[in-house]
Length: 431
Image (cartoon, rainbow, N blue to C red; front, side, top):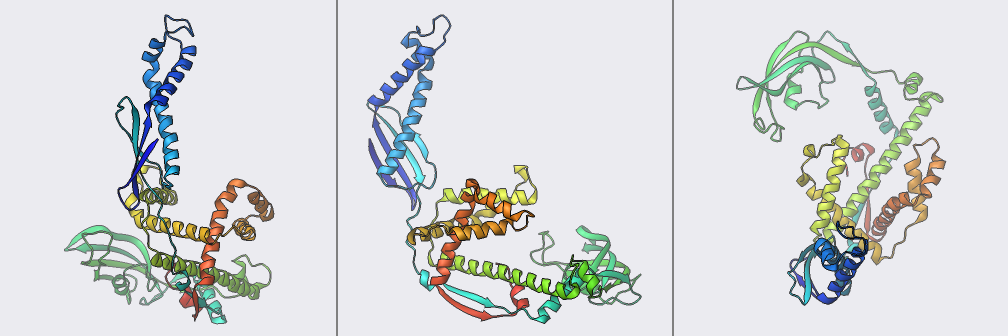
């Protein structure tokens, strides 16, 4: 077997494999003899079909089967011989036989050769948050607002009120799609409508009719309206004031706190806030590690892997959207950037795991499984069932060892702590 390899790109390789034709022809002859023993052809008894008839009937099919097997086997052997690490399946092109040899070319991408650097220079900022009584009070106020009711008030509207209106938007005197509503409730100051729109509803009362201008944002969903000023005409049906429930034991019961009353509810709220903070803090640190790892170790990734990841992200999006028809799937190109980042990070973390010889921590695996199963009533039984299921473990263990790699970076990087309020941290952009 003669093998030559040509680099046709940073990661793309074109490999030509040439084999003597003799052994291949012997395989074809041997396979045809086996076929002839069992072939059923009209006019001949089984096992008595002349070889030339068998070859005429089955020769092409058998040759294709043999060549397919030869290509598969020799490709694998050639890749091993040349110490190549393909990133995906090859594109195979066979050459015309010349009577002496059989040759084919395989074009494929290889995995990048990764040399990690600057890991100790990665900077991570941890948040130092204290949840005080004012934070709990603010959270309780938010919960009261969730349970708020509305009652009609006989006065002009102000921020915090809900104004129920009919409205129609026009551009140059013509109504435009999506610019009309009936009996629509707008809470002033809640940000559910454009600022100019909400501002136009301040100081109105039941029965008022009013026209005001609204400047649509440059990223407005309708391109022909983006950035333009339009006129909205509205009729106010009623103004409603917010009525908050009393903060007492009865309020606590509406959140299924049946023992301990308001005191226990405050405790539960504080504990839940602490869990939310811990989860976001963990995600925030992870995102910092990932971004820094990418910035300090840029690499070119195989397009094969990127395309596979784009398809995976598209399928995930379709599941979230409840879309089954591929024709209505979001465009594949939408997932290009996210796929590139995912693949890059996966390759970098895998290299770190290899370099540092990280082995999966079974205690962390169990902790992860317990987190997954915590919502089940029979959580203990579910944990044992998960732990004893090899297929489940094949999915969870890679996630755990990846987390171990991230923790290695955190432990060996440069960490500083920033004191920040609970509200400021939780209102910061999500990681």
